[in-house]
Image (cartoon, rainbow, N blue to C red; front, side):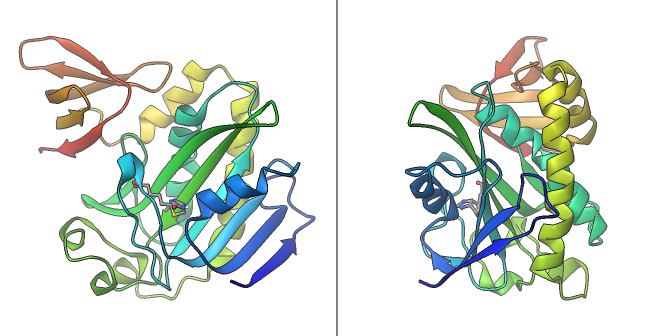
Length: 254
Ligand code: BTN
């Protein structure tokens, strides 16, 4: 495993220090290991490939060479792993749009293009040495062919290479993303959650759609209706019942 430190002093926090690896098990796990020492907020772990990339709910995240895999360490005042995972979807889709793919967010934080997933976020809260940290891990299918992904995910996945016939420089993607993520994070620190959630709602393609949501308590079918201030998905079922879902996997039915 090779590691290179990149210091970009034009960046305020996010991406000011980037640890670039050729391969790791999971950038989220490497970021957690860094927390054994006092790292500055905004430090990033970036890897060219992961051998044990992780998705939400214990799923695997295929991470072959050609994709973009990185994790950001944040130190928010509140234990906001879930909402920061939602909000970081905003700079993510902005970056995807900048590179030519008009992506939207399927709740909670899947970046989608034409109902196919192009990027995902795994946000984890961790206490270390009396400080609460959020590790926001982001995987983007950049310069990948669909055939490089596992057969079972191909029907519902896409890649930048497939949608835009241009090679995407990971350095350029990260430069753009870090700038947008810094703006978002500054706004988050100064803005009531309800207002931030309104911005997220505006980009969430699950609102207004007929959905099936698999939760630990069962399946809820209905219409994506709203978001709570804490970022739970509110689903209105066919009998008019409201379900506030804090965590789950959404399928868009129409
Ligand atoms: C999901 O959609 O289920 C979340 C996928 C998150 C993948 C990224 S890749 C970088 C970081 N390291 C990991 O092991 N997972 C996240």
